[in-house]
Structures are given as C-alpha cells and as structure tokens.
Image 1 (cartoon, rainbow, N blue to C red):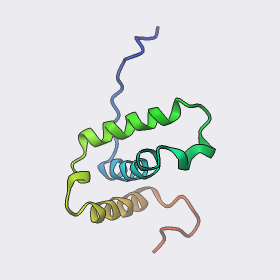
Image 2 (cartoon, one colour):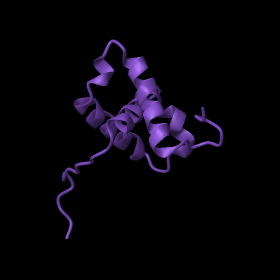
Image 3 (cartoon, rainbow, N blue to C red):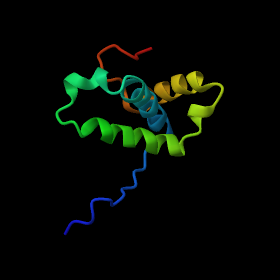
Image 4 (cartoon, one colour):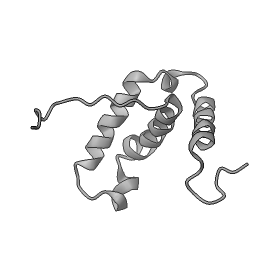
Length: 94
C-alpha cells in the first residue's frame, strides 16, 4: 500500500555529510541551475528533486550562515574522508 504523493521521509545523516552535500548542491544545482549535471540527469524531475534536498538541508543547517562557512566546509570534507575514505584513488589521502 502506498501513501499520498506528499508523504514526507525523515533522513538521518552525519552533520559533516550534510554540510558536504549542501555545498555540492549549492554549487551544482542552485548556483548553476543544474547545468553542470546535465550529462548525468536521466529525467527532468531529478534537478527539482535535488533542489528540494538542498532546501531541506538549508532548513536544518546553521553552517551556511556562519562567517567561517568555508572553513566549516573544509572541516566537514575532512571528516567525511576520515569516516568513509576518498572516492578517487589518491585523492584526499594525506
């Protein structure tokens, strides 16, 4: 049985992951209107879905309003790499 189309989902993620995702989405979905992801989008609904995710992150994060936002993004990226490792060989290794 499926619910109405406007059902909400609660997602629990690490704060550092949320900050990294927020920065990525801000750059690639908001600032560039999703054009940087055009080669990776299969359906036109995917960009508005990413906008909604960005808005959700923005509603719960305080980091984007902080004076030291860039420093916080760097720290969050480092925390994500420490926790999960890097995605590309050699990238992010110290």
